Amino acid sequence: GAVVSQHPSRVICKSGTSVKIECRSLDFQATTMFWYRQFPKQSLMLMATSNEGSKATYEQGVEKDKFLINHASLTLSTLTVTSAHPEDSSFYICSATEGRNTEAFFGQGTRLTVV
Amino acid sequence: SQQGEEDPQALSIQEGENATMNCSYKTSINNLQWYRQNSGRGLVHLILIRSNEREKHSGRLRVTLDTSKKSSSLLITASRAADTASYFCALRYSSASKIIFGSGTRLSIRP
Image 1: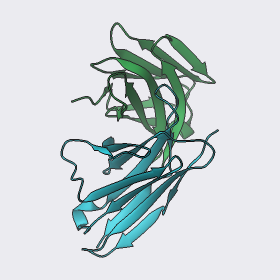
Image 2 (image 1 turned 120 degrees about the vertical axis):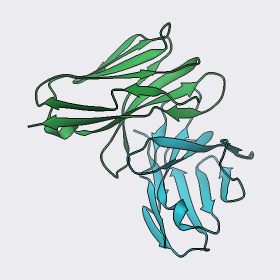
Image 3 (image 1 turned 135 degrees about the vertical axis):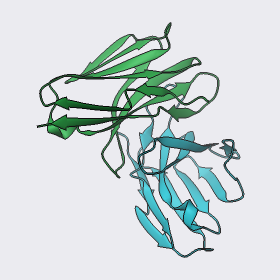
Image 4 (image 1 turned 45 degrees about the vertical axis):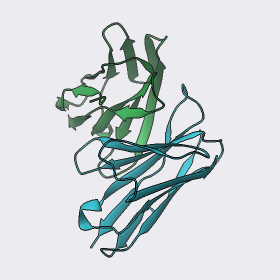
């Protein structure tokens, strides 16, 4: 099946620094990518939807200047958490799809810890 | 909220019994997917069911979709200890290119 690779799987950073998370579709063209955040024992909350070559659409309550999303090619999207704070510590997961009615493939997730 | 509602929130059953989880939603969908997540890990795709389909099977899994009631169910038959996990439905809405997750069901299988 299709593979989505997310990197890094774990990252620890200091407060105030920025962290970039990459999401790659390895064997298909991802016209749409999604970024989610998951707190312990909760569901995945959609942060933003990005289509290749256009600006991401952010969900209500998600700061676009803090969570920068770039979807520059059909195989790569990045999420940059800028000026990270401890409350940004969470599990971040990306997803990619080829079309509107196709399966969504998920990356392995990135556990971010801000100290 | 567009989030799907799942019930029950938690389910504990004896190994060998069947487990049923439900997902309800409010607006039209293109498809609905079920995922499993072990604690602190990534998602494992189980089944995708499209809006024009009513039932799909995969091994011990059976998924139904009732678009008139805007609900879906996931049945796991002959449960095993390894089925212990959280299960989520993910809704691909027709009106917008988003995938929204349900609230999840935590399933525990007792040996």
